[in-house]
Every structure is written in C-alpha cells, then in structure tokens.
Image (cartoon, rainbow, N blue to C red; front, side, top):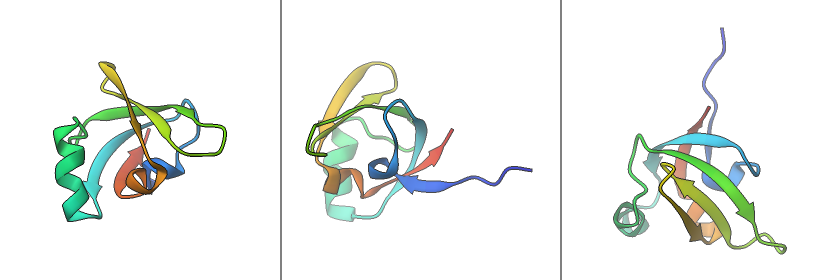
Length: 80
C-alpha cells in the first residue's frame, strides 16, 4: 500500500501535480488564500524560472499563478 508523501510546492518538479493541504506561515496564508490557493485545490507546477525563482503554478486548471520559491515553501501539498 502506498503512503501519502507530504511536501511543499517548492519541492515539486515541473509538470508534477498535487493538492493543497495546509500552510506553514499564518501571515502569508491569507495572501495565498486570496490568490486562490485554497486547501483541497489541485495544482500543478508549470515552470521554474532559469535561476529557480519565481515559479509558475497552475491553480485548479483556471489560471497560472507566479510566486516566489520562499512563498511556495509555506504551502504544504499532497502529491498525486
């Protein structure tokens, strides 16, 4: 039986999909919630800039959100 693997958006590889589970930074979480990063939302990593920052995340197949790697590291996800 497979065990779920928890990681952050910053740990994802290009094209990898995941579901948002929680946030590790309460102050930043409000900003991310307002941008559509809701728990239970499916996301996929679309691109990583040449120097690794920022990254582009497809949110629920509706739009692509660009965020800094430090912000992405505060969003805990469950890999699909």
